[in-house]
Each structure stands twice: as structure tokens, then as C-alpha cells.
Length: 163
Image 1 (cartoon, one colour):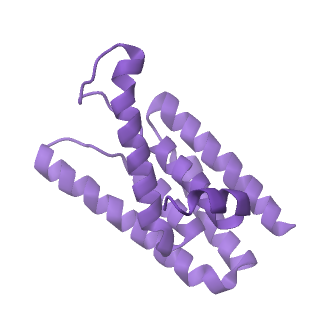
Image 2 (cartoon, rainbow, N blue to C red):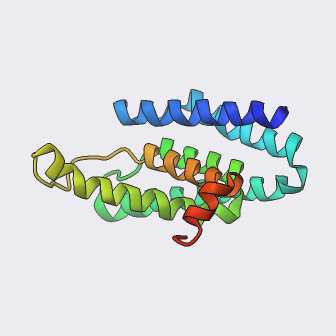
């Protein structure tokens, strides 16, 4: 029963975060931080054997995108990623563990690339690199896909040959 409660929290928070980021381009700390701590609490209460993986997932997720943020900022002299995305990726690391970080980032990046390439032709505005694209919804989609692959057998059998 407790697992379903945490699944409900996961779903509500990740959908709310992706909606806010899509509409405003911001991921508020008032939602990303509780999302991270709920992931840690889930691991502690429902799967304590994976708590170590969750802690390293949160640390690794935060540090990796933090380094990407600062490297891009040093090279291009402007921000290419927000701290909200860094915190959301850390939260996904807490929920899914460090082993899932590369898959989450690959799925989110591929989704963002496809969306940015389709944005111009579908909106008839043309393709410009200067238009910012929120990354949070793609991280959220990657998290939901990862949950589906991990815990729902029909999705797992459908997507495993692709991964």
C-alpha cells in the first residue's frame, strides 16, 4: 500500500513539474526538493536495500548536470541549463538509482533533440538555435519511461529491444 502512495506522489509531482517548466521555463524548488526527498524516503521505507544506490543517484545526477551547466557557461558565456533541471535530475537519481542516470539522460536528450528539430516545421516559425527549450518535461518523460520499463511488463517487453 505504501508503494502505491509513493507512486501517486511520484506521478503527481513529476507531471506538475513538467507542466510548470513547459509553461514558464522554471522548475520551482518548492516542488523539486520535496520530489528528491520523497524519492529518498521511498527507498528508505519501501526498498532499503537500494538506499545506497538512491543516495549516489542523487549525488551523481546533481554533480553531472552541475558540471555541464558550468562548462557550458564558461565556454559560451551564458546559461544553457537551469539549476531546476540539475535538481530534477538529482531527484530522478534518488528515485531510480545511479544505474539509471545514463539512460534517463539519453532518453531526455533524444526527446529534446527531436522536439527542437520538429518545433520549427510544426509551428512554421523556422528553426533557430536561440529559442530556449525547457528540458524538465523531457527529463520527466524519461523518468516515466524508466518507471514503465522497470515496473510494467508490457512496456518492458515493448521497449527493451530499443534500449
